[in-house]
Each structure stands twice: as C-alpha cells, then as structure tokens.
Image (cartoon, rainbow, N blue to C red; front, side, top):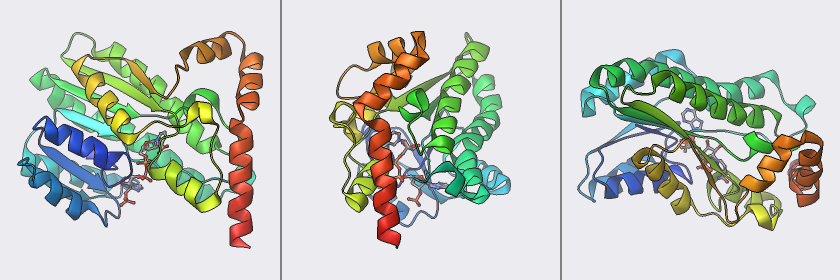
Length: 268
Ligand SMILES: NC(=O)c1ccc[n+]([C@@H]2O[C@H](COP(=O)([O-])OP(=O)(O)OC[C@H]3O[C@@H](n4cnc5c(N)ncnc54)[C@H](OP(=O)(O)O)[C@@H]3O)[C@@H](O)[C@H]2O)c1
C-alpha cells in the first residue's frame, strides 16, 4: 500500500513497484489524479486499486485498510509517503495547520503501521518504509511542524526495526534532500526561490529506487541526495553548534526565509 501515490514522488514509486509486478493500493486525498495513475499502472499489466482516504481521519484510515484487503488481499508492504507542509513563521501557523502536519506526516504513518503489523507478524513477512526528509535531520527555519514530524519518522523507524528484528517484519526510512518534483518543485515554481545547490538535484526516480532498495536489502536508512551528506550530518551530531553554523552557511534557513517572504508578497 502506497500513500501519497498521486504526488510528485508517489507516482514514481508506484511505477517502480509496478515494474517489479507488485500489486498496488494507491492512496491519496482528495486524489484527483489517482484514477489516471491506476489506469497507467493497470496498462503495465499490474493489478492496482485507487483509494481516496483522508489520512487525518481515524475512521477513514480503518476503512481504507478494510478496502485494500478486500480488493487486493493482505498488505506486505506499507509505504508511508503522504506528507504536507506549510511554509510560514511558526507563530503565523494556525493550530489547525500544525495539527494537519502532525496528523498526515506522523500520526497516520504510526497508526497505519500499528494496523498492518499484526497480519505481517502472523505471515512472518512485511516491510514498512517511512518517507522522511532532510528537514528531519537539520531543522530548517520556517519548517517546525514538518521538521518535527520528519525527525519523528526517523526515530519511529529505528524503534520498529529493533522491536520486530528476527520476526520477518522490518522497517526502513528514506530521507530525501530537495527533490525536483512535488512539494519542492511547486514551492520553487511559485516563489522563484531555489534551494542551495548542494541539497538539490535529486530526482523522484532516485527516491523510488531508494525505496525499493530499502526493502530488498533491508536498509535502516537511505539519504537521497546529489552529494554525500552523511559526513556533514555526523559533524552536526558531534557538535550541534557546528551543525547550526553549517546549515546556516549552506543557506538552508535563508532559502526558506526567502520562499516564505515571496509567498507573503504573492498573497498581498
Ligand atoms: N518533494 C520533495 O522535495 C521532498 C523532499 C523530502 C521529502 N519529501 C517527502 O516525500 C513525500 C512525498 O512528497 P511529494 O513531494 O511527492 O508531495 P506532494 O506532491 O505534495 O504529494 C503529497 C501526497 O500526499 C497526499 N495527501 C496530502 N494530504 C493527505 C491527506 N490528508 N490524506 C491522504 N493523503 C494526503 C496527496 O494527495 P493529493 O494528490 O490528492 O492531494 C499527495 O498524493 C512527503 O512525505 C514529503 O514530505 C518530499
């Protein structure tokens, strides 16, 4: 089951799974483009179901799983990919917006995982992939709820792996930098602001390949970026003050500041 299937990254993941002949439950909300995606997957000879479900709603989440099982059978793979973000100074966000980010990006992945685990454990097979973000590793300015949920997914995945080790069930987290699709591509088009070059240039196809590899090789965490970022993140872990300095020097905070200002100008 793939959430956020209609998005910039989700559609690439869907086609990557279809090439592996994996049956697909494609989930989105409101899911305007979902049926078109289902048809293109079906044209590749792979069974797929298009299911709209507002993942903020606990009732819809449960109904969704019932529908997936009745249409396609047991769920072996869950990709928690749906995600939302709002770019604004934290105090300018409404409680509703903060709640939406927490709910779609973190609560839904945690609850969906909780709901698919019993049958995965019983069948002794299953893999959960959570799609995080570099924002969860470095906390950019103007990204408080988003960064918090994406960091939460990293810790959630680590715990899941430890709990179910040896059971046939595992979990991975994929951490993309800025990808030239979906959320980032729309922000860039809308504001004319580009993120620092060091962190851009990843393609949605690379993210899709990382998701497949995380399952095939049971990899704990994959960072998807044009340049290797682990050494920088290791330095930041050794010294948070240095990490803060590096993130500032790279221009991450400044990029979001400019994007937020551009969006504000656009609205006024
Ligand atoms: N693009 C990037 O640069 C980037 C970088 C790092 C991490 N990520 C992460 O990668 C994932 C996919 O990002 P993307 O760029 O593909 O985003 P996107 O194009 O905005 O797609 C978001 C997806 O989530 C679905 N969705 C939103 N709210 C929902 C809700 N309440 N219930 C159910 N589904 C909902 C959307 O459905 P509709 O299409 O129907 O609205 C869409 O399928 C996200 O978790 C994002 O945080 C993206």
